[in-house]
Each structure stands twice: as C-alpha cells, then as structure tokens.
Length: 501
Ligand code: TXE
Image (tube, rainbow, N blue to C red):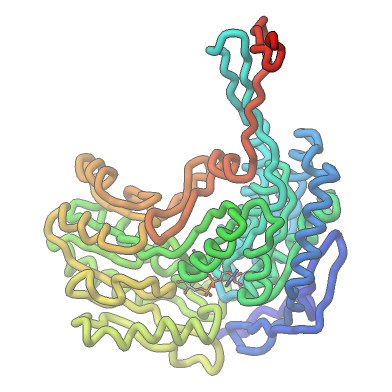
C-alpha cells in the first residue's frame, strides 16, 4: 500500500455541542474511531437530556424572536447561497474530514457528497423564491387565502453513512422555510456536521437558529426525539431506530419523516446494454463501500445473459482497488466501524443453510494490519427467501438471483419488507413501462444508477420510510398551512340573543 497522504486539516480534539451560538462541553466523552488505523480520531462531548433541552429552548426562543423566521426572503436566500459558497470553498477539507471519519473514498466524498451538500443549500434557496399558494374565490362574498408559515423547531437526526450529503439536505430545507433546528449527527461520524455548523455561522445565520447536539442515540437521540417542544422531526437511519423514533415522537404528536433502509432490486434483462448495466450494477452496490440505503443489493439477472453477466461482475469485483480511502485510486475503503464489519460478515454464516453459492469475497480483507476492510462480496441465491436477499446488509455485498420472465422479476422485486429504490436495465420500451407499473418502490431508475432529482420526491414504500424529501415535500413538511377567510361582501349574520323575550 502507498504511504497515506499526510493530514492536511485539523480535527478537533473534542467535538462539542453548539447551543445558542456557543460551543458547550460536557464531561461524558465517547470516542470516534478512525476506520483505517482503528485509533481514536477524536471524542464527542455527549449532550445529556438537560443540554438537549437547552438546545431546543435556544431554537424555540430564536424562532419566536423572528430573527430568522421573519427575515425577508431575499436576505434568507443570500445567507443560504453564502453557505453553499462556503461549502464549495472548503470542499477539499470537508471531503477529507468525511473520508477520514467514515472511510468512504475521498474521490467519492469530494466528487459527489460535498458538492451535493452545497447544491442542497442552493436548491432550497432557489426553491423558496418560486413558492406559490392558493386562493379560493368560489364562495360568494369570501376570499380564502392559503399561506405558509414556518413550522417552528425541527429536530434533524442524521446517519453515519453519508453525513454531509444527507444532513445538509435536512438543514437546508429546515432553514429555507424559516425554521430553527437542533441537529444530531451520528455519534460515529460527527466531523463534517460540526464543520458545517462553523460555516453556517460564518455565513451570517443568527445564533440560536442552528443548534447541534452530539451523543449516542440512546442518550442524546432519545432525548431529542421525545422532546415535547419540537414541531417536526426528520430522521435518516436504520429501520429499527426509525421505529423507536416514530414511537417517541408519536407521544407528542410530532410529525416525522423517516428515510430508512432498503434492499433494492437491480433488474437486468437480456436485452439490456450489457456494459452499461454491468457498470451500473457495480456502482450501485460498491459505491460508498456499499453503505448506502439506495444500494442495488439484490441483482436479478435474466437467464439468457445470467452466466456471462455474473462472470463479468465477479471479474470486475476482483479488480476493485481496495485501500486507504484518502488515496485517489481507491475504489473501496474500510467499513465505518468494527461492529458494522462484524455484522456484515455475519451474513456469510447464513449462506450454506439458504443454499447460496459464494462467488467472491466473504471475508474481512487480508493484507491490512489495521482497518475495517471487507472484501467486496457476491453470492448467488437460489431464491428470494435467502436471508441475504431479505435483510439489508449495508456493505459491499451483492446477492444475485436469476429470473426467467418479467413477471417473475417484478414478483421477486416486490417480495421485500423494503421498497426504497428499484433499478431496471432494458432496451425495450414496453419492459420499462411494465417496470414502472409493477415495481413497488419510492424511486425507480431505468437504465441508470441512482439519480437524485431534488425536485422529485425521494423516500420509500413499506419499511423504507415515512414521507418524502424533495422541494415540494419539504415545503409541506417544514411549514404550516394557514387558511384565512376574508369577508368581501355583505353577509348578514344571525342575531343570537337579540330576539324578543
Ligand atoms: O444507525 P441508526 P445504525 C441501516 C443499515 C445499518 C442499520 C443500523 O442497515 O446497518 O441501519 O444502523 C440515532 N432515538 N442504515 O444502528 O441507529 C443515532 O445516534 C433517537 C440505513 O448504526 O439508525 C444516529 O444519529 N435517535 C441508513 C442515527 O440515529 C437515535 C443510514 C442513525 O443511527 C436512537 C444508516 C434513538 N433511540 C444506517 N437510536 C440510510 N437510510 O441511509 C439511534 N439514534
């Protein structure tokens, strides 16, 4: 392995909490581990329920003051554009921090995740200037006008797998529609959210608008999710955690959006553009080290090309460059944590009983003294009942199945508790249309890996989530609708109590 690039950017010794414009420490520390050398990279100062309450209180008071919620549209836009510019200016640093923290290849963090974070702020800054609402004139003598108001305080709980891209989306949307927020990054990956808060402050967002609390899910996350004074909660993470969060928020009738797991079918027909489908299949399962909810982790191949396709996939998998995520040539880095590595590996134990054939991989990588590296893995499953076809593995682990007819493909794709994405590769227009009709997923990509169109809803059917994220979906979520009826004509009123005795 080549020598690793020297650290070029500072990592804070302690990741503190940011409440009402102040950095706040705490005595409980949790280590953050570097997935490459397994050393402590930094620590987080865990926010307890009291500190979470301070953060929510700060957001509430600031919201009521109106320094942000009542700021003119153009001023708000200017600040959001400034955040985007600052993210772009610090893109190398942010990508480096992300890669150091979660082990994602630097090239992917720099090429996709950080630009996406900047784009999230630009997108919502532009979106709000085009916002419209309704007026109803059908009722004689009344004009009913519908307006939107910011909802108040948003709790934003982020995941560890692509923190900057996913958490920035939540912050950008909450701020754009005039809200204050409390952000809780994953305890595994606090670094980029922390740096983003610095940049948000530098951009001119008033103190108290964005607050950040660090800590474990059980302590900090649970205190935030159950806090009675939050108005909405947006979460991205695992399905089990999503369930706990929705129950906690439900006690306060706090609306939630949940973007959860997936086990997406990547369906490849005989008539697909072979090379393109192959590229797409590899991208869909091995990007971000396989740690993505949108992974095409069940690869369904039609029988006419199955053998050739699977052979080619395995060959390309063998050639993947695994290594230090900071090196430019690296295509697959280490998994985020030791616990996650063990979980991914545990699925190998299910293969034999389910009649699956291991095609490649299936072990932690040899040849690395340290680091949570896992071999890019592919298996062939006899049917969709196999555990590796049902459970989200969230690693570089592909499960192939072979199908005969389109109907079989749709049946297998839909036989899942998840329904986040679907991918279909075909040169036949009718097959693409049939996929559109039959595949039960929140997003479907035809002849393409994921394309995240922010104008269009993103989210899942079934256990993949609740609600959607997009311009319009976020507008609906982060604002209250108000109908005001104006009397415009002469409408006599009944005179209660004015009758003769
Ligand atoms: O993340 P969790 P985990 C999937 C993936 C992965 C599995 C588990 O399959 O293997 O989920 O991931 C906070 N109240 N995805 O357990 O628990 C936590 O602190 C409030 C899919 O490592 O979902 C962190 O900030 N908050 C995925 C956040 O929830 C709580 C992304 C996410 O942690 C909490 C990540 C609680 N009770 C994992 N418990 C995707 N959809 O992209 C935890 N948290």
